[in-house]
Image (cartoon, rainbow, N blue to C red):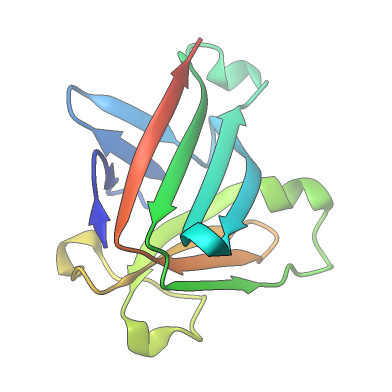
Length: 143
């Protein structure tokens, strides 16, 4: 999978892009939407800026990750012991090889990633999204 205009940051909760671009998906953004279009093999993950005081200086109102050529999509259910707002708070983003498609609880360090690896998004409530696609593009909406 090729990341077109960003990388997963070293904190495994963030995205980075050229010219110092940075988005902390754990603290500054709330997960808003997952959509999948089977006919076009396209998936979109969307976050919106948190209303928390700690995010007041963030100049991005929302961001999307657009996956094209989706060849794998798996979702793990949430843990019902958590409150529903925890569904929107990213816990970690990371990579796993395809032979670990049933594993939602670990990830590889970014420097060890190969193009064939799946991208994993895990949330505080335990639910998770694992994808593989030809490409992923980051789109930002500024304030």
